[in-house]
Length: 151
Image 1 (cartoon, rainbow, N blue to C red):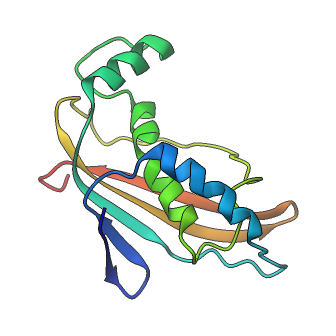
Image 2 (cartoon, helix red, strand yellow):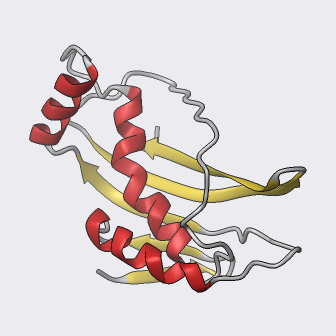
């Protein structure tokens, strides 16, 4: 897999989706990270073009979660499909926190229109809005899907 820094603000493009099992294996190495009291979440960004859904994986997801096959992606499937990109961002050396111990607090989904299951999508995931709270540090991962026409 090649990683191409696109801009000096830590934006990258990948040519293939990272393998999740391999990423989970690398998560243990982040236990050595010691973020300290002043944690800053860097503006990391990763993109991958023309991602297609594996029909067998989508079929299994629908079966497990109880989604009917209406020809479109369940919105939550898009999140699952992008998870390797989220892990990839948090495994970057610029990301200051160990992955073990990070707690997932919430999801928010928005869609502008149905996403046909047979289409390919350009996916962008980025770390945004790092902030200190009374319970520690929070940050958001914003994930966007665009069809090849850019919509």
